[in-house]
Image (cartoon, rainbow, N blue to C red):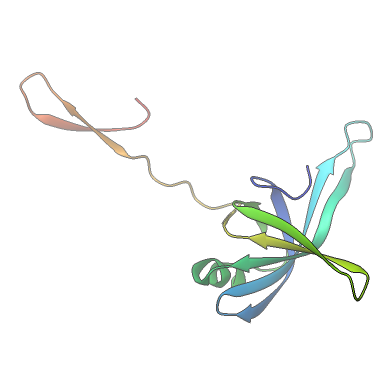
Length: 122
């Protein structure tokens, strides 16, 4: 599984860096089908970017579960230091226990020409 969009993860710590960036330590685990135990796929720091996204991330608490949305992984090599740096960026996410939004209302024409509201699904 690892670090990718639509993956669920656990938040362990949160630190506000600026009004457009919040940094958090997260972990992602998967269940080993042979042993039934959970094994860690990813553990590290990620940055939440964007004013609204950073503010939303700053409200996260230890052990909150989130679903990653738009994510980006980049790396660069510093030739002078002989070291590679990897950056994990999160541009959107959802809380795992967020209430589902209300279904949209569908408008349909009834036999006499009146419009009736119906909720999805059809």
